[in-house]
Amino acid sequence: MQRLLSILLSLLSITVTAQDKPLDHSLLWKISNNGISAPSYLFGTIHAICAADYFWTDKMEASFRATQQLYLELPMADSGFQSEMMQAVMLKDSATLREYFSEREYEILSTYVSDSLHMPVAAFAKMKPLALLSLFVTASTNCGSIPASYEAEILKKAKARSLEIKGLETVADQVKIFDDMPKDSLAAMIMSYINTSVERKKDFSNMVEIYKSQNIDGLYKEIISQPDMQAFKDVILTQRNKRWSEKIYVIAKQKPTFFAIGAAHLSGDDGLINLLRRMGYTVEAVR
Image (cartoon, rainbow, N blue to C red):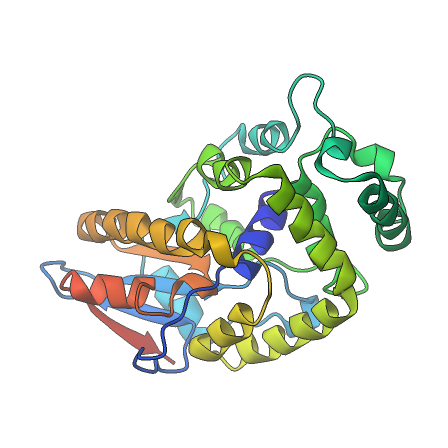
């Protein structure tokens, strides 16, 4: 479920300024200088990718092995993580998914859920809209099987090395972003996705090709073409980047760390690369 939520957050990360200086084409960035003895690394993930498109280079592996701990967006290695995530996306008390939609919208939703997920909408009656929308996003990958996840693969690597694994934010932090949104905004988001589902599959394929070229600026531009969440870009991207950059600033001084974070967070004037540079770090592409 964490991967599904992260997919959604990445697709909704939508801030770019026209005056941003173009960044080098790289998913991997070395963080150095500013008083640290050994560099840390910032890696931009894509939260869902077909297995045939997944890649991991020798330099990525060498950079990962030069670090002593792993930070993901969420603490995925924690023992109670999965149960906490499941509880976080469930509606409380007597609330139901149907309350978010008009009668006509719910009819459309029911048909779409049946056609795309091959399940009755009643199966999701007690789930928050974000959980359902995340499943739609995963279905749009059109991989023919469960998509691969960079977070999951890097997590395996970290466990094999017995590294400490932590998160930059909590499950509650992520879910609160959507819990604070008005009900009609969440419903509109889902209906927009249903109405543009064909285009979304094409968008995903294009986004994967840009990701494989390691063009993080280009990926950013592809993401901002999505119609969703313009009103919430500050809480989805900018505010989180600022909080994360402050944590990364401190963590990188403690020990060499591999930070694996959604690639949408790297680019932009308020992206992690520029924020860390303003804090005094040298942040340079590794290819």
